[in-house]
Amino acid sequence: MRHLITAAIALLSWTLPRVGPLKLTEAIALLGAPKALASRSVQTLMIRCYWPFFIASIVALAMAGLNLSVNPETNLTSEKALYSTPGMVALITFIRILAYLITVSVLVHFFQRSTQQEVSRTLRIAYYTTILPGALQLLRLHTGLYFDLPFERPDAGPFSGIFASSNDQMRLMGFEIEPLAYASSLVTACCLSMHNGRRIPWLGMVVLYSTYGVGAIIGLCLALLLSISGSLRRWIIPLYAAGVAGAAWFIVANIDDLLDQFQLIGSVAERLGSIYNCVAIWLDHPLGGGLGTYGYWMNGYDRTGTFLTNRIDFHANNDSLEFLAAGGLLLAGGHLYAFHVVLKRSRSYWLWVACTALMIQSISAYIFFNPALMVVFAMLLARLEPVPKAAKPARRRRGVRFVWPRLPRFRWDMRLGRDVPPR
Image 1 (cartoon, rainbow, N blue to C red):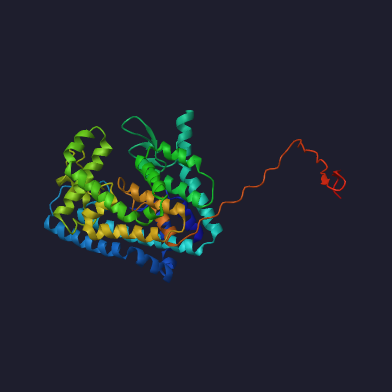
Image 2: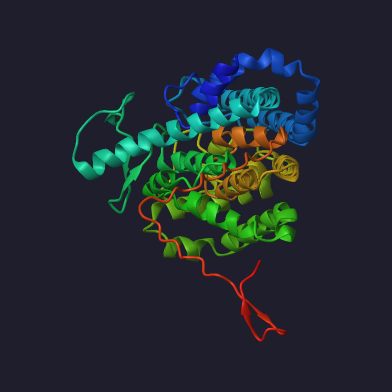
């Protein structure tokens, strides 16, 4: 079973193939659920960390049923069969939360029971399997060699993993469905490599830069900056909450002017519109519009005019505000409380940096159910110590070595009035 969990962690950035709504990492990790859920220590940790979020999810699911019964008419559809109706979206989202909690429990159990050598080997394999597709794509881009990487996407033909952005930048996306998700896995893999006592992961950083994942890179830089001060590290959750609330208030108050300025940058305009939508949904539904119903409500509030969608399973690319729209302050607070618990248990600098970087990135991405964050949460809950760096071997000097001759030392004898050699 430990080998299966090792494989699951190693494939944290491999989205395809999916098993229903789950990624490959979650599907494999769920096989170890019986032993993990039977562990008393794992149960205690999970309840301590997730009890507000889980209770708020149940309330948000009930609010989804109530709101959808009042507004049953909809012409929204989805390309995914499991998300055929708004009610099914809410139900599948709740099932996804259960699968997420079980997956984290399995990973916590694995890190608690494994030796340091097993954990070190697992993290080393995870680093190389994460950067492998990106390194192959870099080779393909800069050498002119043509080769197909495994998996195929019906909308893109052979799955090369290379994504052309609106400004003609070729962005790497690994085996993920978008470059930003791949950048999240790369940030995690690089931080875990440093936690594992390895040298600076230069190749991983080059691949990360080549994704042009601005949110992930900014999140990592801000996390490194905030880690300098112990006071900032202790108050990171209140600072994050205040920053998100202040930014949301400013964007809602100036949404029209901001959309006029950023109308040519589609991704920025979409995220600004999502922030406005989430706040507007919450103001109209203080207890939340319902779990997983952002796509159901967003078209009634959209201000961009270019991002109208008929997909029910649409996400806001902002975890905190999407949870606010879905379950009000109760669900958004449960989300932040989980981060507070795991960051408070941190014994490793690089695990703290990884978790904080992903939390900051969640302002502009859908991160909470990402397997990379699951692995970081599990390691923090298990309170893993950083692996000490191995001492560098002493260098042997080769060639001819010049040795200065040792001259005889003399001392002054007061009685004789002259130098005499030492005895």
